[in-house]
Image 1 (cartoon, rainbow, N blue to C red):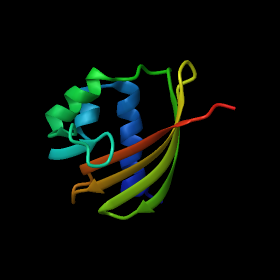
Image 2: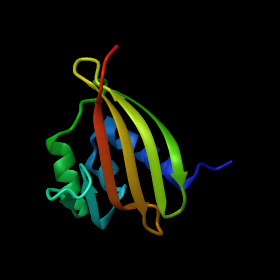
Image 3: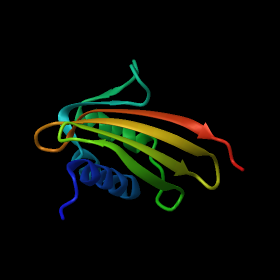
Image 4: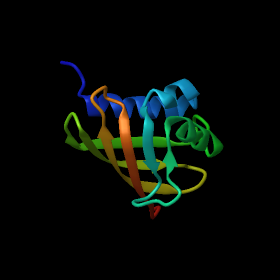
Length: 120
């Protein structure tokens, strides 16, 4: 059984997160995509080239984090996931991502919410 478009997109995001390769990052987004680091973000990255540059300015090195996620909504146009990002040397986060996909499966709009997760 083939993976859904949403699962494939998130897997591509995690791969790009691991590699920080501009081609992997760029493959996720349309030319005019918007990447919001929080809802209604006035400093959102607009356009694939800006998204790639912004990503690389604040990249995480491979091996410094772990990410577990689960699909909540998975349609050809809309993907919503919950996740948990663990940075063992720093903090942990709970995540909510809303991804709007274009017809070709690339994101036209990505919005993330993240909250610091208390360590127990």
